[in-house]
Length: 91
Image 1 (cartoon, rainbow, N blue to C red):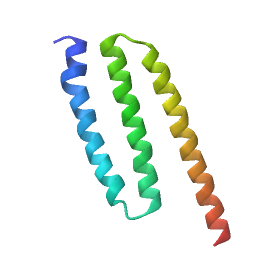
Image 2: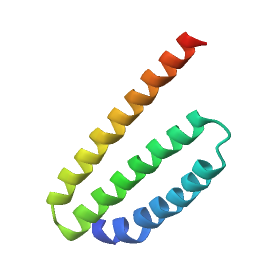
Image 3: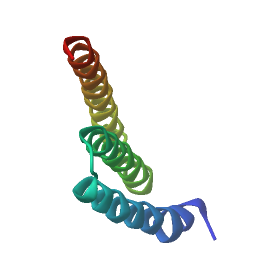
Image 4: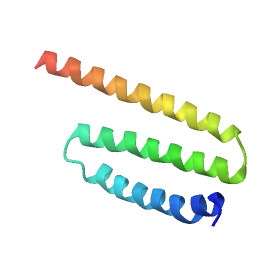
């Protein structure tokens, strides 16, 4: 079994199943923070899928897209933390 087969037949299905589980958590999250964390995890898992696809198809341009998505996810998490901090000061 080569690395490409391992990525395609094992890693990709595991990431796909984890996306389904995380999406269920996103829909059922009782608090806003649960939903934001699950959305961040969805983006991180999507970045993993893009990276696996990039390696499998030998297209390094997709890694640039994954890095941009990682930056957007990080900035979103920082913005949410800033929002929570401001909301707690007002309460």
